[in-house]
Length: 298
Image 1 (cartoon, rainbow, N blue to C red):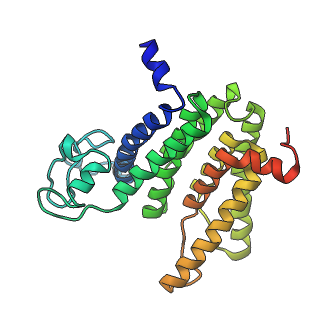
Image 2: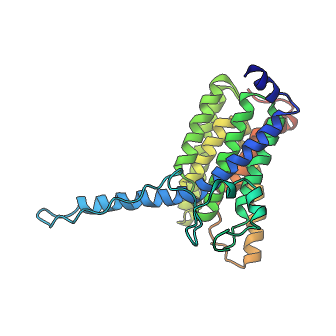
Image 3: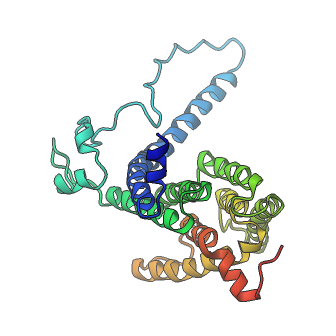
């Protein structure tokens, strides 16, 4: 076993192992992207039903018991075609390969399978390869992979629903602080300040914009995502993250508005741009700040 680990950790081998791992992780991310919003909606509906029953006046007839809902989480039930219900076997769930062999269609009903599925797998695999090349066989490499996979899933969910789930952002924040207990990416003090500064910076912008215009410019999920990014990168890199996110967001968002011919009041998810800025900040933010200031602030 020790010899196998040493072989897998070699610089010529490790990135390719991580590429395969990333492709598998990307397949699971597609499940998270599809199911997590549905799980959140089911939870909200159950909470609303409980509140409605609790609020019934005394003496009201007791409603009949409702049938127990089907178990639905990230692992149960088995993945199936949303059009025909065809259960997807393992051979049809191989990252990239299955989509290519099936020519992007369900094997049972022929319904087209979105190109987004292989794209998520490809991005997750490519990111894992890059992180392995950047950090070598180390805790930092695996941590960076988890960070990229997490913000990738959060970004696609935000694009679909304009929601950034607490089930992703909050664990990501705590994981960043835990990893930085040992200064994996930054010292713990900088990580804690980064988390606080990340949240408060967007929280302040939100309230200034709301008081000035009476409108909400962003959601609380954006605050939590930037707090998580700050916990990983430290407060020193946050200006770089914010500038990169705002710059890309302004260019891409403006282009989308022009192409789609929508008004300036159209809501555009900011999570994907924060995620991109966070990835750039984690992988290259320290070097960018050092090149800009001549040193990295302590």
